[in-house]
Length: 512
Image 1 (cartoon, one colour):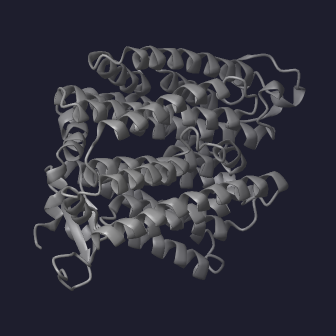
Image 2 (cartoon, rainbow, N blue to C red; image 1 turned 45 degrees about the horizontal axis):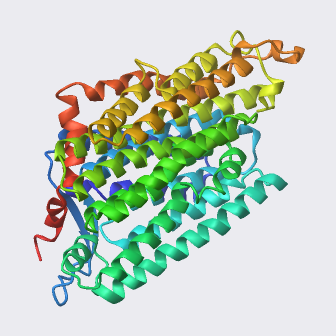
């Protein structure tokens, strides 16, 4: 298994280079190769998660041993959390890339689109596999810079403006992260996450560690677009081509934002009550403010973008409540339940929000508009888009038996058991407001009456777009199976175990 780990970086990177070199020489090369590679990586990631035995796997690049007991080689680490993220990244990547085969025909520069798309996948896979913070930063920048270019792919004024705003705030985020890496290297003389954890565990300079933690929250909070670091997200997600919007919301903000926060604060730093409280407050603000900003939107993709902020709030409060319980020495089973709920919702959000952005792209592809006031009555002429959009809307609103209901329910139960009753009330209230928002979207887009006669003549989108939407709609139901005993222990319980048992992650240094 160890020798297969680099494939998640080598294959998409080689695909990007091959598209640049040969894309114009071989017809449809740039369309077929990314889909084939990402389908293979999706299968490989699911093979890992099904055959995983709760161990920690690593692939070490660089033949030199440790110098002064400090690991200097590059470590790629595969554990429960990174396997889960690889499944999400490559599955959504494959479906978004397959969807783009038809969608991207209306643009020029297909070679550049697919090359940047594969580079973004490379960066995200690298982030979740990196065992040291500097290479995590390098791969983060590969993914981020690719996404900047893809947001501005249409080269229109508003797209360029959105990309510029995204770049400015992204650079600020990168500055915070790189500054922190420098401070940690100065203090610990190491870049390996497990080694840094071992060193700062006995650190006497607690104030410096708290300062670094706060800067990391700001840096990765900007990448994840959490409140109050969210200003770039609505413009960027609404301006990008829809397959990229699906990747940005469904995967990117998780891989280079949420994942990094979870990884570092569980496996590198010691969990403290003050930091756990700060993370939980940020998650709560994101959950509440995001949905309130979404409810008044009439641009379909901006509405979905604000809901991304809100739904990431659910993920963060699930993880944050677990951190609070652990910091206070509370019941570890309730902490595990809350963290499992947050990670389950992270997985669910990738599916239903990725689907919703593909639905928005299908509507815009056929009608030429995303304005809800100009739409209506599309359910008859676009049955696949309509039915899949309804499934995703019910999932994000927390309606059973769709997957979003179960992950929200777990978070709400954990909050109530931990006696965080305000969070319980807010989580339920936000879900109700979310339902109202998506009922508006469904009515105005698919089931209301439209005065535009041209909408009666449109047809359903091409096969590749329909296929991706149907698969994601099926997953909105199928992911509910993660609660079934046996499946639950194989996947979610093992992922949570990896996080809660910090000493398990330190096993990657066992050969030093």
